[in-house]
Length: 167
Ligand SMILES: [Zn+2]
Ligand SMILES: [Zn+2]
Image (cartoon, rainbow, N blue to C red; front, side):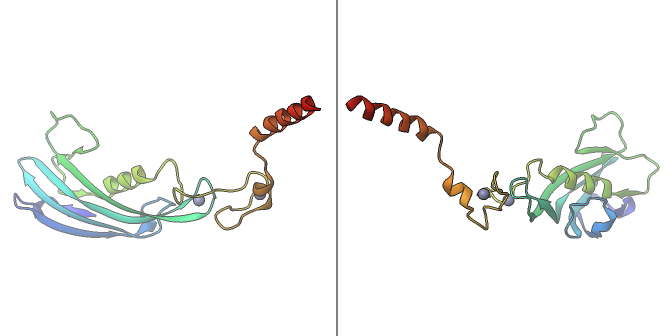
């Protein structure tokens, strides 16, 4: 994902990359990474904007099953040799002697930031039964049917009390 700085001009230039997933050291990656990027130069700075696309294999926190999540992340990053600018996630320092810019570390970081903290296969995932461990997305287990809402217990008690008071 290297771009020779001499190939970047004041006019936008398009670059396409495909990164082998095995070279990114992200175990969740399920597919190679494609990066479409447009780049242009202004003074000592190089601006890149584009899209990073790939797929992740994640384990659902609720039902524990593997599911696939697509990443299609737009990005915008500036590489600059000027050292008087505040660096942040979107501004990177470019040593003046460098002849090329490697987007790979930035792409890797962007993918890492896209791995959700809470991994759920679907908003409607029913998870596992706490008593028998069955995946409730695939099976309806007996324990959920027999489980009686504890709130009814007090009502039953009340009914009993009322009934005995009537006698
Ligand atoms: Zn799930
Ligand atoms: Zn159950």
